Every structure is written in structure tokens, then in C-alpha cells.
Amino acid sequence: MANESKYTRQLSRLRRGPRQPSSIWPRTVHKTDGMLQRQYFPLLDLPRELRDLIYEYALVAKDGIHIRAVPPVPNGRLPICRSPTKRRSILYNGYSKYHECHFDVTYEFYAPKGPHDVCDLSIFLVNKQVYAEASKIFYSQNIFDFCPEMDEDRSFSTCHLFLMDRPTSASSKIRSLALRFGQPQFALDPLFERYTMPE
Image (cartoon, rainbow, N blue to C red; front, top):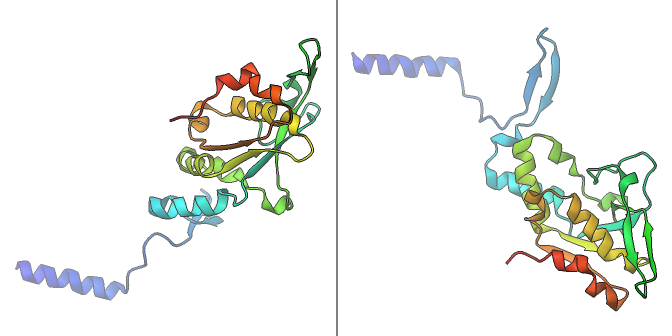
């Protein structure tokens, strides 16, 4: 009896035809009214190792992530900033303690070789799991370069703003920063003492 039911199960499987391959095929989402909405690729069904390779391909720049200071956009936001750009202000220490001034500044990603080299961070917006996995790759494997050729004096200030805008979970993953100091006294800036690389 047991063998008979085993054979009938196998026979019914054969009649149904070959099985579809695994769930790596594009899936289709239907609206409640039955109309076709769109197809999507089930990224989270892939093994974690393959997802990490995809994140690395999409988010790691060979020449580093270049970040430079820019004037603020009136009443606007830049994609990289979490707070409005109009609230940005930096105290600039000049050659003496009597030479201090404030200037408004924010920052942006830029690519020395052209805009096509800038990483697209929209993958962070997919969901919390993708953000957690992709941000680890983005922050730990990139070199964040704050060394603009024309504006060395703002290198540290731009880096300071960038670090202040990152959540603790993101800034703890950063492994490589590139700074350039045009004047020696910037190394004595008290802001510099607040940040130390993790050991």
C-alpha cells in the first residue's frame, strides 16, 4: 500500500510537467483589481554573498567618493544631506585668533571624470534590510576623499559636516578618509581632536 501511494505521487508529478526553476525569475505583482502592475527581480531571494557582490559593483568607486564644499541651495536640500542646507555654517579660523568668519556651506558628491562616475545611492531606499546590507559595503569599502584641488582650506570642514550628518551606525563603518590641509594650523583645530579612527 505504501509503495502504491508513492508511485501515484510520482506519477502525478510527472503529469504536471517539469518544475519551474527556483524563485530567481522576475515576479509579477498584480493590483487588487487583477490588472498587471509590474515585474520585479527578487533581490532578497539571492544568497547574501551574491547580494554583497551586487552592492559592491553598484556602490564602490574605484577612485574613491569625492566630496566637495558647495554654497547652500536656497530653501533646498541636497540628496546627500539630511538637514536643510540653509542651516549650514562653519567658523573659519584664519591666520590669527582675531581673524574669524562664518560662511555658509554644504557638500555634494562629485566625480572628477564626469557625472557618470558618481555612485547612485537610490538602492538605500528599497527597504531596511537592503539599506543595512548596502550601507555596510558603501561605508566600509569606499575611500571618502575630501581633497578638492581648488579649495584645500575647506577639506576638514567639509569632512566635519559629512561626519556630523551620518548616523552613528554609518559613521562607525567608515574605514578610509582622505583629507588635505592647505595651512598647518588646521591640524591644531579642536574639531580635529573629536574624531579618531576605530581600532
